[in-house]
Length: 572
Image (cartoon, rainbow, N blue to C red; front, side, top):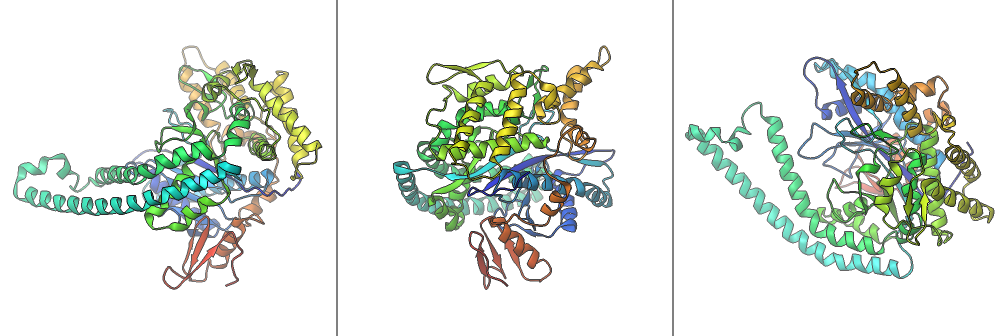
C-alpha cells in the first residue's frame, strides 16, 4: 500500500475484554492487566503516564499507550484500553493498530507465567470486540483532528469558553472546600464509629462497620470507589452541562450535518456484526447501544455518535489546577471523537473505516458536501440500517427522500471521485481507497457476499455463524452456540479471523515486517515521534520521566523541565 501524508492526525482507541478460564481462584482483571504490563515492559521500552493518575497508564516507545479502563466502584472488572500513536494517514494508522494487537497477543504467554507465579494457573485471553456475552457494550473509538468550528460559530465557541471561566473558578473554590469538609467529616465519623464498635459488640454487626473487617478489602474498595464516582460526578456536572450545550450549539456542525448520513450507513463497511438476544443478527456491535447524536451529559451509558467526552475532560482538568488543557480548547483544531465505531479484526474493514471517514471529513472541510443527504432522525435511522443484513431497508432524509445504506454510501463514493478528479486531494493513497471502496460496495450491491468473506467483519462472522448452525445437532442450544461463535471470532491472536489470516483466507494490507517496525519506531511528523524518542532515550538513564499525550516532565516536577510534543524537544 502506498505511503501517504496528511495534515490531519488520526488515532484509534480500542478496549479489549479480558478472559480467564481455569480451576481455582480467579485473579481480578486489574491483576491480569498488571501481568500484561510487566510482560509489555519486557518486550518494549515504556514509561508511566502522567495524564490520568487515577488509572494505570503506560506509554510505549512507539508513542502509543495502554491503560486500565474501569469504573471506580468495580476496580477488579476493568478492560485493557490501547491507544495508537497519532498517525498521519489511514495506512499508517492500520500499521500501528496491528502492532498494538500483535504486542498484546505476543505478551499473553509471559503474562500467564507471571500469574502462574502468583498461584493462578488458568488461561488468559483478550477479545477485540465491543460486546460481551451479557450484552455490555464497550469497544472502540476513533479520533480525527478537525476544525472545531469556523466563522461566527468559532467566535461563539471561544466566547462561551471565556464565559465558562468564572463558573470554573467559583466551582473550584466551592467544590474543594466542600470536599475537604466532607472528607474530614467522614474521617471523624469513621473514627468515632470504630471506637464505639470496639466498646459495643452490637455495633460491630452494622454493615458499614463490617466493611473494615479483615477479608473485606474488596467490599471496602468498592464502597470507596462509589464515593469517588459520586464525587467525580459532583465535581464535573456543573461544568460539563454548560460545556455540553456550548459544544452542541457550536462544535463540529458541518461534519455533523454533512457526514452524518455517511456515518450511520458506514457499518455496511466497518460493522463487526453481532448476535442479539433472540438470535437476531445486526451489522454492528456498538450500534444498538448508541443513544444520542451528540453527547449532552456525563452519563456513562449514554453513548453518542459524536462524543465530546475528551473535551469535557480537558475542561475538568482546570479543577485539578491544570490550566494548559483548558487553554488548548481555544485552538481551532480539536480532536473529534467518534463513538459509533466497532473493533475490527479484518484489515480491509479496519482500513476502510478510517480511510473513508478521513476522506469524507476532508470533503466536508473543503465545502464539497453541502448537498449531502441528512437523516431526519439519525439515531433511529442508524438502528434501522444495522438491523437489516439484507441491506434493503430505507430511512427518511430531511428532504423527504428515502434512501438505503447502499445508496447513501454510493452518494459519498461518487462525491469522493469528483473530489479526487478536481485535484483537491492531498493523500497519495486516495486512489487506492476509492478503488477498494468501489470494489466492496459493488459486491454488496450485487449481493456477492462470498467475495467479502475475510474482508468485512460482519459478512465473515455471519458466514461462520450460519456454517456453525448448520452443524448444530438437533436440540442444541442455538443461542448459546451463536454467541460462542460470535465471541470466538474476536480472540486476539487465536480467533477465527486470526486463523483465516494465517491460512490466507483473509487478506492483509500491511506486511509483517512493517508491523514489527511499528512496535518500536514511532510515526514520523507526529507528536508521537517526540514522545517515543524521549522514552527510548531515557529508558536506562535513571532520570525521572513522566509522559503524557501533550507533554512530558523530565527530571521531576520541582527542578525538571517540560517538553511540549507539538514542538520538537531539545536534545538531552
